[in-house]
Length: 251
View 1 (cartoon, rainbow, N blue to C red):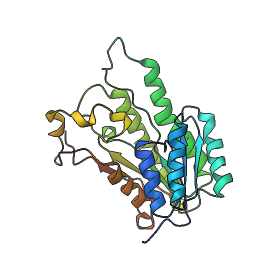
View 2 (cartoon, rainbow, N blue to C red):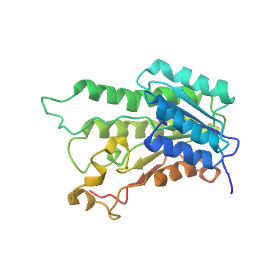
View 3 (cartoon, rainbow, N blue to C red):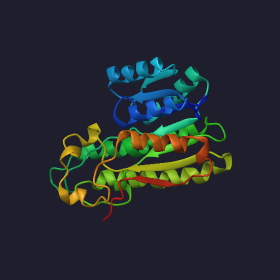
């Protein structure tokens, strides 16, 4: 089987579960060696690493709190010390605090502030640290959300805002790093079967499903496959782009 990412090293932030774990597996299947970061799920992180190693992949799990901006450089340095280089950064780590309207007096302000810290400032810090180390022709991929460009229901203002901010930032980074042939793109999945959507993904009301021409949620494998394409050699002229994986969601 062709392995177009052989010899490459990828870092997937938030790679211990959900889409991060699926992306780590997909990239490994394409031949890449894998580092994942995680915040608290050490058992899950080590389980991902063991599965990757069983495939013959070099793999490493690194505990790193993305809300701590000072942790970004040590994270990248650890990857470089272990693997000798970094070719692909997947900014996947994020949290979701949503469900209340912005004028709700019981709004979880502390949680929402942490959401901005993790989803935006944390990925900015990681990208800055990685940009200095990526080789020419490297790849940066942000995992956004269809909520970053369209909001079909209430209660998600701050989450949607973080994803819009990441999109704008990614396009700026694409402009900055284009001279080095480093591509920077955003993938915008719709609802997926992850912890973020626990209790929601399997019970979506018809009003939400009716917005989707393809009336189902995305699979983790579909999104991970798109990450692999953008990380691979056939996407070398795609940068500053946004790829929706939302079943054609309309508003």
